[in-house]
Image 1 (cartoon, rainbow, N blue to C red):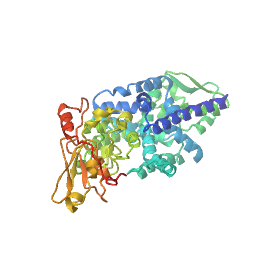
Image 2 (image 1 turned 135 degrees about the horizontal axis):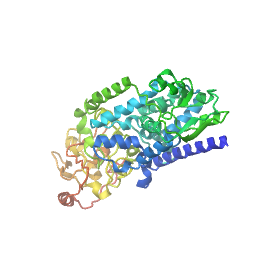
Image 3 (image 1 turned 180 degrees about the vertical axis):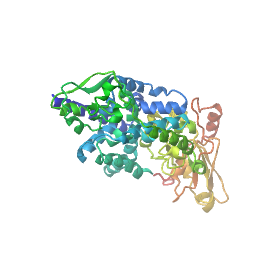
Image 4 (image 1 turned 90 degrees about the vertical axis):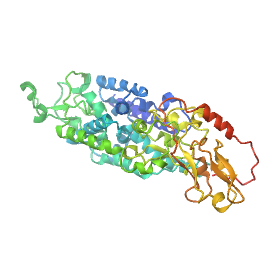
Length: 513
């Protein structure tokens, strides 16, 4: 029976992990909006922190209250059964073969990190995406493993390999989390995960808890197999402040429901069948220290204002967000850096930010037109965004969402500078925003109509010269709306006026990638 329970638990964990992976793989190929971001909808950390930072209730995340409510009844089961990163860590720990160790004071760090995120959110800065386990796993898959998979697929097919700027950093973070298992099993979950801290707080007052029956012989075998160090002997500090009867329990083995993830390992190991799962009204002790709380609050007060500063003002001219992105401040609060839009972009043009948007913008998406432009027939980034940082626009609406303006560098343009026929940018523009006009020489030269250009970057991506393109897109004129339509009568009229009749192009004139 115990083996059957263990097998069922593993099957449940692997099923959630497989679903997470499947939804990640299907991100580019289209998946229903209900299923596509279902994991993030059920993530209470993302919901709470983002809602606080945005000063509004994130409607898409309301279902995460189900997880919180269930935690108040059944305990921290999400970490033990549903969290895909927790399952990956379990698999890694089983390979590392480290024996569980008792919990120590480092487990308070996750509560301190949770408090830090709340304080930063109260100041209008959401950093949940940097520490949320679902975002970490999604980002690691997008930046670390997807480029490898696409490269291997490209060896046998015409699939274009994806390349990202921060693959190495994402892999280092992910591998470090796994290698922390050398220190203790589930080290990330038991010590650092703020989502685990949030659910742990709820689990401390949960209705159902694992506890010991009178059959317990205090042998301690259960504590030896507990992966999160939830089982330990009561110390003097644990009994401080309690009545005399409770203090006599000092030295007894107890289960801290805030640390227990319901893995059932203690249940399997106990030779006396003294572990039970039953209604227990007495809450576990809240053990976040005063020092950790002061450090967390102080860090939030200091780092939140700094998160939007540093060097981003110098680089904003090339900070081009995907079409449909909400205003920058709200975008930084809503984006959870999950990497889904990066993976879904068919041109690989969406790349993770380094410091272009300040510390708060690390790993948020930006369009790098030289790598790949924004195709007029694609709106996947908005379709897969789980938090609405990128609005879900239909193709027509998206075609009017201006994200920047193209500017011709005449000193590098073949037509303007060398009097050589080119106009690849003109042919690449799907909106007829580039006109061919008489230049200083004998050939026609490109001129951008700033009234029509939406900054898609297809002209820059296909510019045939080496190095930086002769036509580049800047964020000049970018429109960022939280609601409302981008399509106006003026834009429609200008685009209709700019339409050109179809013409025959000499063979080999257009240089396609």
